[in-house]
Amino acid sequence: MFKYLKVEKKENFTLITINRPEQLNALNLEVLEELNRALEEEGKDPSTLVITGEGDKAFVAGADISAMKDMTPLEAEKLSQAGQVVFHKIYQWPLPTVALINGFALGGGCELALACDLRIIKEGTRIGQPEIILGIIPGFGGTYFLKILLGEAKAKELIMTGKALKAKEAKEIGLVNTVLSDENFQEEGFKQILELATKGKKALRAAKIILNENYENVKNGLERERTLFAELFTTEDQTEGMTAFLEKRKPQFKNK
Image (cartoon, rainbow, N blue to C red; front, side):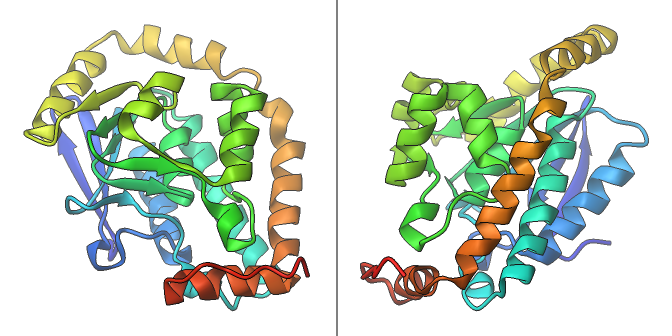
């Protein structure tokens, strides 16, 4: 049914696994389209939703830079819109959503985690928005999610520096909720998720409605994020940033 996802019904929750381990579960348009389809199908009879990544290296290491490097602004905007649509659905899911962060959660991976209600992270991994190092900005809603979660000052710091935080640092500032040891990470994570998933659905639905009620006010902001994200794909710095990333060297930006 899916090439890049695994969808499993567990006790009281649904587990969606991003399944591109050779690419560190990086997001491309195909992955986002499959995720959108999975959400449509599971939304017919929703349960608590858990998202994780295949393997033990990455939750989602980011968007697929090799696929993005030579995109036109129109293609970049299409990718940004696809990500925003999918992450909006996760954010507005009627029951709790949990990111089970089993490895690197960078760029689009961090945004995917931020779209969830709760984030459980494995000790020793990192999370952050390093897009600025690539000559771009977050394009899947990160400029919104970080600001409402951490406040404007900390959101600006993380986006403008591109710093990736260690799990414990992320917990200290409220970016994630729980840090678990590598040993039995998934098993321990599932225990916490089950405790959440067995709460009354009517109360959980009501809690999400009231907590998310201001989301509609940011649609214009997300549209602006998408436009600016796309415009950066006309710059030499975007090409240099992504080329340097793929060549594993430090970028030499010319501010062009």
